[in-house]
Image (cartoon, rainbow, N blue to C red; front, side, top):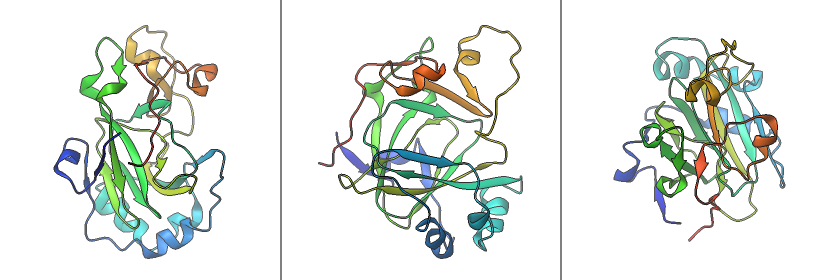
Length: 211
């Protein structure tokens, strides 16, 4: 699978590199968080990360002043499994080299997305990116085999922490709504299917391997 960089032209439809931030303290705290060798941990908000000096700047500059949460996604992964989107951008900062598998919401046709449309992007150590709200994403992949990744995740406060109210509608997007501000499309092979995730990915369940 070809790996692009977030500095390449191909990244433009999916997001942009964040400039003018000092992530040093944030990443120092992130490196102290667990990163399992056989699974992935996601924590929506972490007080120690939100106490970092750059938090206010991320909230004010990055999200225009709305309340946010800063947590992390750490661990070991090399499979696509699922793709999600939010009604807003997501901020990611890599503590070590990691790969994002990204798609476009506009490529969802009749509630399905073909995984052949997915592209892989390297986020180098220390780099922060804004992943646009129209970009489909999920857990990062390890860039170096079996070397756990560590990734900051910044989102509007309340994202991924509960369930949205069910109005009994039957639209395809209603079926995708998996958690607060989280629309999820799962591959048939994904473990999330057992938890009721909408099966919306067709084609191969991509496995990332460094070229």
